[in-house]
Each structure stands twice: as structure tokens, then as C-alpha cells.
Image (cartoon, rainbow, N blue to C red):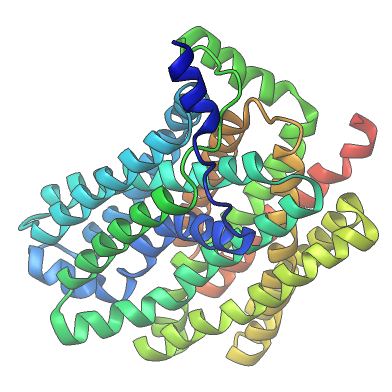
Length: 404
């Protein structure tokens, strides 16, 4: 026994890994979920024709994915608090890989949907645990900066992936898109094992359904978590409604080509990147509270402007200006609000991140559904959804001083 203790004590420590490399791997974990959804957008008509279903039917591949993604997080978070981050992430990569292969080989819609559920079940583990691992590794201003970079990655993936998906579809067919994300999962799993490993080494919370329920209820009842988490979820819901409404708005209403639509998505990345970088500087200078309020006000201003443009001047340039304002505010609120929601809950970071992710995906599903059904005028429907969500987020966060 003494020899074993001495061996452990004298074992060479693991070589330190740079913070930049850790953040890069966390960004890859976070982006896998959105990458595997938006890369399909240009291929939906081709997928429908190949599977002998309507375009409306094949969009269920996105709806099913979001639903499985949302509910899966509620299980992954407590599992990671009990057993650590490493194995849930690696299992998530494996399940995502299997789901991607299944989708790529699907010959009918039911099999495609089965594969999408598997994909979502794996991607939800990497996405939710990217935030929990960030909370394990960083705190304070460093955590806010890391969350900003993760949020940028989550926006870059849906920003550029339609262009990539369109190119793959044109050259190799839509099934090649699933091959690409499967390869991405393999690379991500290897990078996680080398760079991050296990990050949650503190006392583990018992894995008990009653205890898990109590943990979630305690988070919902804790205003330090509930207010910023719900605020962030509403703004993310607005972002996803923008992604889902874009094909109908740009291709059908504004007569854009699919390539032009892809370029628009890519252009949004620049706005999100600049705002994400400025968010951490705002937080350092003015504090989280004031910075989040300013971001929410900016988001609401852009949303109302989009609604007004849809009513009085439904053309591209006014819409683009208003959308840039919305995206700028959203990119400030999301990382700072996430950092504020997770910071007080180190021992429950997995559960807190899971609940936050669940709220985000449920708001995303609601935003996608409303933007598709509220009106046959795509720009008006999007403007109405963004206005409802952003004003609700602004009003909710305005209650925070009275709650503290």
C-alpha cells in the first residue's frame, strides 16, 4: 500500500494545457449541436425528394432534433455532476457519431428521424457540458470571456454551415453532410480526451431521481439562476426563430438564391464576433448587470425595428440594419447572462447548465413554431416573434433589482 501511495505521489503531473486551447475545444463541443442542424438547411428540398416526402414533412427532422436535444440535457447534467464530465462527453460523441451514420444511410423519413434523435441525444451532452466544463475551469471575468467565445462558436457554426452544406450537397449529395459531422465528432472526441479530460473532481452529487428533481426545483426557485437563465433563453429563442425563418423570408419573399442566403448567414458571424468580444470589455468596465441591461435594450430595439420594417418598408436593407442591431444585443446578453446564471453553482454546474440548455431549446422550438405559423408574411412573423421574446426578456430582467 505504501508503495502504491508513493507511486501516486511521485507520478508526473499532467502537462498544463493553455487556456486558449481549452477554449477552442469547448467551442467545438458547443458548436456540434448547431452545426448538425443548420448544415442541412440548403438540402431540405433534395432530402424530401430523395425520401419521397414533402418539404414540410422533412422539416420534422429539425423539430424532432430540437425536442430530443432539449429533454436530453435534463438527464446529462445530473449524470455529469455524479460521474464527472469526461465519460458523458465521450459517450455523447459516440452516440452522435452513430446517429450521423444512421442518418446518412436512411432510406426513408422514419429512419432519418431515428438517426436525428440519436444525433440530438449525443450533441446535447457535448453542448450542455461545454458550459459546465467552462464553469469548472474558469470563474469571474475569465468565465464571462470563455462564455463569449463559446457563444461565438455556436453562432459561427450555423452562420457558415449552410454555405458548407450547400457546397457538399452540390458536389456529393446531401448524405455527405452527415459524413462530415460524423468526422467532426471523431476529431472532437480525440481533442477532448487530450486537452480537457476530467474537470469535475469535487464531491459528487448522488444520482437519485428525487435528488435530481430537488436540484432542478432549487435552481428554478433561486433567483440568481432563474432570472438571467430565462432572459438568455428568450434571446436564444429569438435567434433560432431567425435561422428557421430565413429560408422562407429570403428565398420566397426577397427572391434570394440559396447561395445568397448562405452568405447572409455567414455575414451574421461578423456581428456576433464583434459583439461577443465587446461584451467582455463592457462587463469588465461596467459590470454584468449594466452590460446585460444595455444588451437587452439593444435587442429589443432591433426587434421592434424589424417589426416596423415589415409593416412599412419590407425591403432588404432596412431589414438588414434592424437585424444587425438585434444580433449585436443578443451576442452581448447571451454570454454575460450565461456566466451570471452559472457562476454561483459550482457543485451543480452540470444541472444548472442542463436546465439552462433545456430552457433555451424549448424557447427555440417555440420561436421556430411561432415564426412559421403566426403569419404567412415571413418578415412580419419574425418581427413579431422577436419583439415578443425580446420585450419579455427586457421586462423579466428589469425585475431583478427588486428580487435581489
